[in-house]
Image 1 (tube, rainbow, N blue to C red):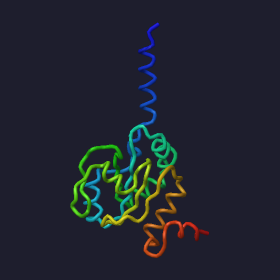
Image 2: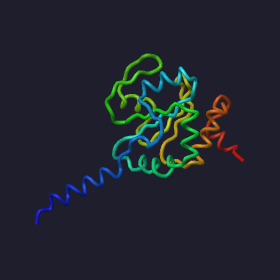
Image 3: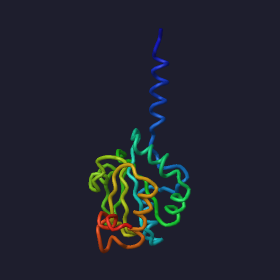
Image 4: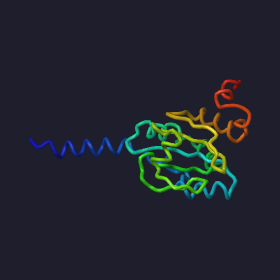
Length: 163
């Protein structure tokens, strides 16, 4: 009995089921274009580090980003940037420095995916949040970022004072 076709089909199915592109229907853009757009529109940035084969990226895409209210909130109020944490594309920092996606991930501490980095329009890091998060988690992060609370307290302090 030749098992090659069966093994090939199983491999293909498992690879397809955990692909971690940005969530469908969201206006995620490439890094450099997103950084320019954020400055032009004076909008905060949500930078999403994902990678192919990341089951938690796929999980957050299916469970959390499928919420229509969250999609509307992020689409209206943020410039959404997706970065392949293992990619090799050249990116430009706000300072003009060029580095690869992997180098950017290392600089921002993206050693595991998913990682969500909230930034100001100028590219200043406001909060780095690793791992699977719920819709309610992201709503809290939005209040922290757009409410300007990061200027006065850490994210943990803000979340600890939540009613």
